[in-house]
Amino acid sequence: MIRPDGPADRAGLRPYDRILQVNHVRTRDFDCCLAVPLITEAGDRLELVISRNPLANDDDDAEDNNNTFDHHLDL
Image (tube, rainbow, N blue to C red; front, side, top):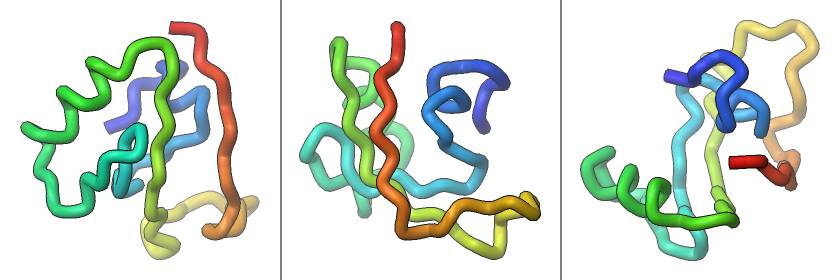
């Protein structure tokens, strides 16, 4: 779930995005119990590598799945 107007929403994450890496730690095979602590303990900077499922996209103006997002969040 993406909280409306929350940090993930403002950074461009969408429902069904898969987090593959958190601050250079591969999370591909992690469940949420292992990935969430990495995110919450990230500090001031959070770098995510995500995979976006194009079939889960319901936006007509969808961005290309190969785009790189570089957003700074005010936490």
